[in-house]
Image (cartoon, rainbow, N blue to C red; front, side, top):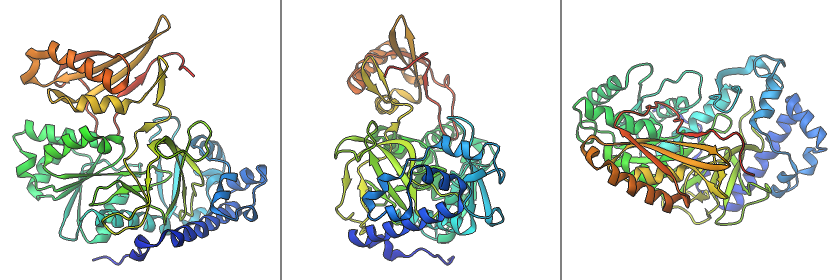
Length: 445
């Protein structure tokens, strides 16, 4: 088994010691960024913020938030290429390059030192161990790694645990299914969408994933689906395996995760300072309210993310009670429920695509795929939900459509139109899905 640098003692620290550790690490990363990154130094000088102003954890709210566009500006045409003024180490110390997907604009380039990458792999190893992964497991990663950070950390984290890793890479979905069967893989890492796609293709090729592929745990990320009860249920039933969710981004990999107890998602507190803020005021959200996530990566040296606005939304219901797994880190009750740039007002009601996903995936006659298209006609917002009917239920299309309209009204508090197509009509995705399309020329405020 590989030698790990992770200290298990950190997982059971009392809250006061944990907060003391977070505060110390926050001051260290703030000073490191101020001293070594022209981007952060200019930003904090303009805000008249120095390390002396940070005397308690509450004082971090004096520090301005950082957004993806700030990193883009810091890199655009600036040296050292390609990281620009956001880089906080000599470029000779950079050992890993990744970039954001660019789904919301020009990709941001991210650098990591070897120590950064070691810690990232350690975090993945810790998370997977908490779910029951052991050296006897064989993990399949049906993912074209390329430039996105995605499951790179999972690959190296599993190796650190001593588990065997099989990279699916650039091959067809059908071939990946066959490889998992032939190699008798026991764990898998992918998006929730692709877990369902793999099961669909397995059945088409005559392979029963529940009995012929011994996958007993599926590690999901990249989409909210694994924390949506109806989607989780579909995946678990398709594979006869446990589904585990975690939250992360290129700027802040693995800031929350679900352990084997599945009593919520642990905040990865020794490595991140996680704030859940009111989306309007950016002050601490009230308990039980929807908040937006702001994170500080406490250990990343090459490109620190300090008070980074992820734009992810979660319900601020943080438990301070120790998990039955023994870890003392606080938990959020569920994962990401949407993004601020996707949650929008429609006819005066806040609407999130995840509310549609819960409804669609709860109707067994429908396939796993759907799309949501919002348009505006004559000052009226129209929501069209496009789904697929399973072949054996095609004769009941009208009945199913009426049921779906009714359930969507209950689930979203809005009237939605539906279009039910034949099975296979909608696109399939291997990485992040693109199911929400807001085609209005302007959004309501």
